[in-house]
Structure formats: C-alpha cells, structure tokens
Image 1 (cartoon, helix red, strand yellow):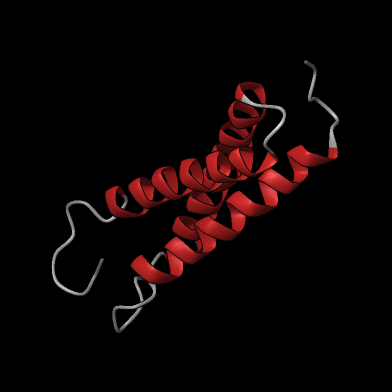
Image 2 (image 1 turned 90 degrees about the vertical axis):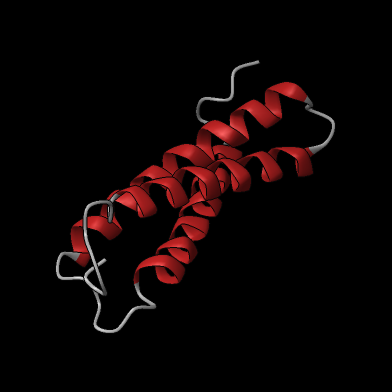
Length: 99
C-alpha cells in the first residue's frame, strides 16, 4: 500500500492542523495576558499537529483500509496527544500567567 501522493494524506494533515490549532487556543490563549512568544509556540504546535495527523492517519489507513473513519480517528487522536503534549511542555518552567 503506497499512500504517498494520495489526497487523503492532505486531509489528515488538514485535520491534524485543525486539532492542533484548537489545542493551542484552548491551552495557550486562554490566560490573560497572552504569553510573550506566542508565534513561535503556535508554529511549533501547528507543525507537530500536522505531522502527527499525517502519521496517525497513515497508520489508521494501513490498519484498516475498509474503514476510513478509523483513519480520521487515528489522525485526530495522534494530533491531539502530540499537540497537547508540546503545548503543555513548552510552558514548563514558567510560573504564573506567563505560560
């Protein structure tokens, strides 16, 4: 099974980026005032979410080609876990509202 160049990979990347954006808004943008270096953190979390969405979707398609919903579940869960982990770990060592 060769999925390189398959349009579903781009769907997994888009879905992973959307999940990563949601995680970033939920974890990083809720505190007032926003963190000082938000652009670099957002870009890092977005890239991690896109890559994790592609990897999770690829493993979901390789595991069961008959159920594409499983691939979307894999893309979403992988990007949620990876982006959430990076978003939380990127604020380690900071205190107060300067997360």
